[in-house]
Image (tube, rainbow, N blue to C red):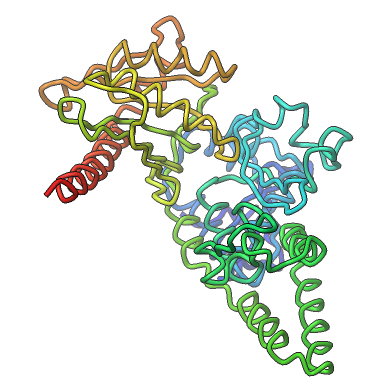
Length: 435
């Protein structure tokens, strides 16, 4: 089905290029903003396939379509987030509870770093994530807050792509007098050397300012800065520095955002309706692997946008529990996980186990004053016999458990696979050391 001829389209055409599109209603109000690898293909898709009820309702109200082209999908992702914050379109906010949107924050410390936080996490520390300006409280905590973004996975991919051109540090600061040990990221050019004492606070702040400029959509300003610095270094005959700046400029101008294109056009959509738990958000799943209490390990796998995000997987070697007690082992894993304040909190936790596992997980979360729903999957003879364990009095969790059943089973299977793999590695090392 072609686009309705009564809908006004900018320049009467949709380019086959990356960009951000704006859906306007008959009163000229922006009702939806989206990004695309191809504006032509993405916008046309709204009129060429069966839609869920909410999307069909939105499409019926479209009177005009505007767009802004961008040089890359990565820059479209940045522009989309800034425009959603500026205009707060009705259907963008309806599609996802605004408290679960992912945001990019830049920490305020000697050596700042970017982190991803959810809207509800920002609200818990008194920061309004939808405010165009940083409040006094926010300024005390962060240098900048960007978002909302529509996908945490795409945001992680964007950060990975940008870091090749604008490197930052996530490692510990080098302590004077201690042996210098550069991190792996420093060795491959993704960390400027905070861990090795190779960069001053002043020079590091310049890098962070460039990162902030990028997520403000001011890529041109960064390129001008790099060119000016490169020319200055050449005039001073600092040729090694000039070459490094040239490489950064090249990396910025040639970002290959194929990964973002793929995710932009094949993202799994879950009909959300009025529910508050978003299955496209971060879901963490835990499993314990052991044989008679020996070589015990735990795994944490992360699903975002309905798919595994392996860069976020974590594994834990059990340290405090002796004997066969996988409930206690799960508690240890959760406590160690929650000790990492920089890891974003999930929308939902899934555990491989029954009532005992779910109750213990809920108790740990309660102690940490964290409100995250927990669903357990008690194994049956086959997948059809799996029993889902959760708070039956909570109708929202009951609906989510039914709606996301297959997703949760896939996540459970992946956590099991990851745990077994690590368990075999640990057991193998023990057997080798005892020979």
